[in-house]
Image (cartoon, rainbow, N blue to C red):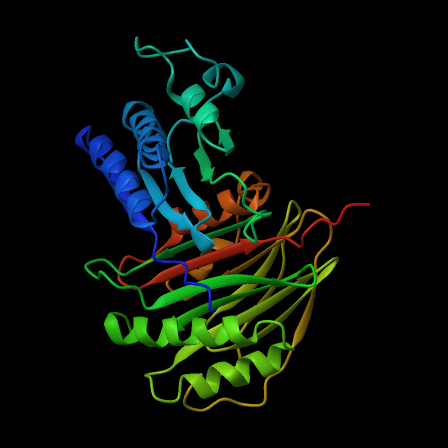
Length: 337
């Protein structure tokens, strides 16, 4: 059985107090659509409401990004802003701490409610947070240590981009697909490519690319980037304008773009590139809906972000609203010693 695709990310701009209610309603609705049981939809709404309220009170250019985790494993809510940051983060996470005269339960409530909560902040730069609500009894998620956002072009309900990660023998393989153009026909191409990827994800990267090429022959075609994460290095194979970069605290160490061509129409013989990944390095794969200039001089704060927050930072600060935009960030899985 082919796993379902990761659906597009819901975007809620927090530019007015009324957006707090919209964020909560969106999180509850997505949780219900994913058939999350019991009180999970209400817990998702609480997390979204608290994060959005925090943005409304303290931040600027804030937004929530809400999406299901793959395979019905739960829900993820990301918050990003370009606000003042939190100079005393540990105090902000404590119940009762407030700078606005409220009860001060916001981030503390999020930390208690979420299965996993990650937050990073820097004064004068902004704050990024990721709250995941995973269902009990799930195996170790394939998205652990990875981040992903997939956003449709403004005014579009369907997204012509898509992405996924699969795991075989402890090795993760990721794909980002950018269907030509945007709208329903681009979305059809992207979803067709994902189905082929899930069926062939354990093969060598050139063989996976050939499988996608055959599957896309009756669609408008797509750009495709494939990334296989090994301990110490990654392999990249791509056609079209899907970029891969290796980001470490030192800077952007490597960057590659796919070979010219359109998967489904005409492609050259695929070439696989090896990219060194020193400890702490994150591989970032993104479509051309992300402005490539983000990697020219990223801040030290950005380069030290864990993968889910790095993906959110790239999308929040460098997405084109006129095109579908996808970012996938991941590190090799850490094997127990």
